[in-house]
Image 1 (tube, rainbow, N blue to C red):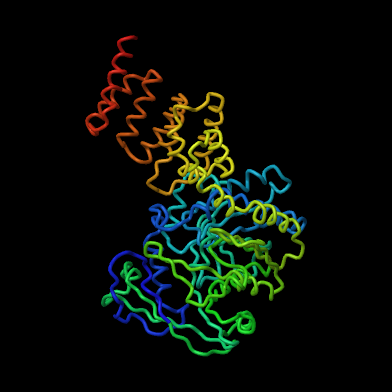
Image 2 (image 1 turned 60 degrees about the horizontal axis):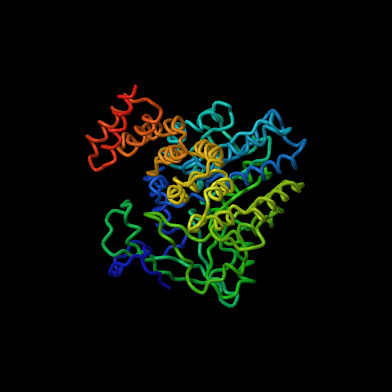
Length: 533
């Protein structure tokens, strides 16, 4: 069994003939170490440079769904929460911290209007790279939550750690010490953890092993580019269903041996072990909320060919087997919540253990995942701006449906910009409100898209120049003295009568960007306004 080189390009095919690694179980293949090193090296840049997809899994829509499910859990735990101790919400593999920001904002906006506002609830952002933690600690929009005791950070290796050392408080969360149930969040993480691969033929179970070959000699296995040159050759050997030391993993494997038609499938060993770590940490009382590209029905796992590996920059992802994780939870007496349909882009599941009464949680899952799925929201709205005759008021409705997500704003900006001269006066209050709420929801990670500049442009279009200046000045602060920003700021100053400031800016624009021809006309407007004083 073979698979072509992982990158899909139009370049001339170069055969991979140089052996890098020979015949190891798939979860022990060096590709997983390549993945870990990629995230350690890249840090936040894996997302800020748009190398790894993350918009749907970290935005305010999914954060709102999670917040409502946690609220449902609080209702189910009425009278069972120790008020002297925090209820921890731990996100594993937090990456940018963007999901955590949106969750905290959505959750506390809602909870502060309920009887649960006095509970001690703390969100923990965790990841393996230290540089990610340092980034979170410098994020202005996270600091307020830290100062309120609602947020802390921890370095956590999902493959080896069994305790959590909190950075801000210095507290250590250990097995046997938590007084309250635990909420665990894992978005776009589980498919990145090592997975085994098996095949079944006529109820005979085979372990699938991987050999790695490269298109060139690889003396440096730490080279981050090596993954782009790798070809994987697969082999297999007959094994029995007592493959693992853990009987609970073997029980799931035996289920597949007995019931799976001839097929090759992924088996999420590392994710099961991670879940077991948090089962121990929580004393067996926990809720897992997870979103990933993955399958939750056994029939979706039936593959006649090797499951596909998708390259993202120098990292990769695979379809995740939520069905196996669900079997693992159910055999331990837990409850599994999945949708009645197959997802479009992102599968969202909930697994509960040791929580006997979860009626409100179940209702929240139905309401915010089954019938108002963030995945459906994404699929239905992704190309709304492509309609040629769409009205500005419809674009504003789109932003409300997206809960003022800054990424959604980027999708519609070009369409909105074409309508700047036709914005009805009656909806200018809506545009002002929309701009401010987009900014409230904006979590800056250093991406190249200049959100404050775009917000300033919209406000200038409706002649809200004072508000526009605020955003243009933020754009200068965040992205430097870019000539187009300075030109727009100059125009706003001119309309506000701040003519000396406007003249100084147009001098700078003309000196640095003579290609901006409008600057000549703008200078004339400023000089004429000065003469009329």
